[in-house]
Length: 310
Image (cartoon, rainbow, N blue to C red; front, side, top):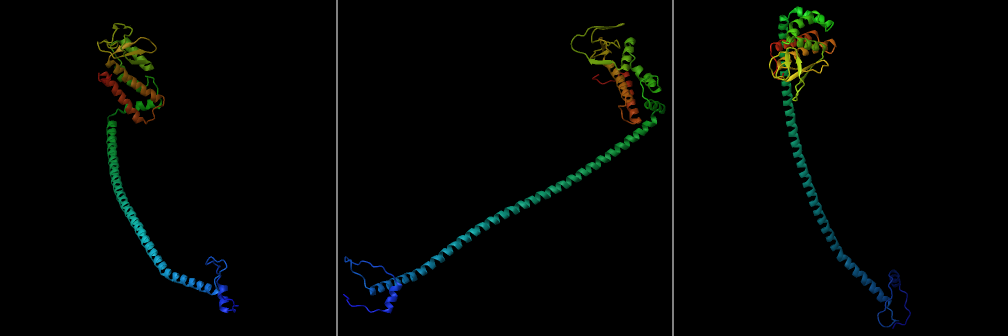
């Protein structure tokens, strides 16, 4: 055991003050303490061991870092390659779609040009045909005017200037004499006069014959008690229509021929009434030709030409 007083050592006090080491029990004796020299040696040995461990671990850490860096770099490179491949694939699809759309647009433009050209040709053809028809119509009109009685047209113009239903005016007097009178001149004179008056007054009614039995109507010299005899001509004909004069409840069966003659005259009177009322907005020439057509219809009906549905 050391019993002397230790001399102050400058290096020892410095090492002790720099390193603080706790006291530890090394055996069963509670009063035993390690000497300062042993403490210094222990601290130095620990530092040396830590330095050796640090120097040994440093190359290992650098190797790990390098390995991790290489792994990260490889994964990043693979990811970028995949993304680049995807982008190239999408770009290729878009290029193909653009090419397809360009082809479609070119095809549509070509079809549009062809359609435009076709429509232009068709329109030009229609205009040419219309001009040809117009020229032919004008030629026919000129030829017809050469054949028309100028006196008749002058009478019509005079009547058109002041339309009237008075049959004493030159124009209507001619139509009555040449068309209306002969067309309504039936065998049964008394009934013919009644029919003519009803047509002039616009009070005649023509209606189809119903299937049920109709009350018998008797006319002087001619009995019309069924649909097999015409009340106007007195001939045995199948009658599909009947006429009623004014407000009378009496009906007269008429044949298809008689009905066609009455209808032709009624059409003429209807048209001249429209002219009188100002409902026909045309020039003199179209009106005149329409009247001539209606007069032709009366002439044909008078001769027995009429539609089968009559």
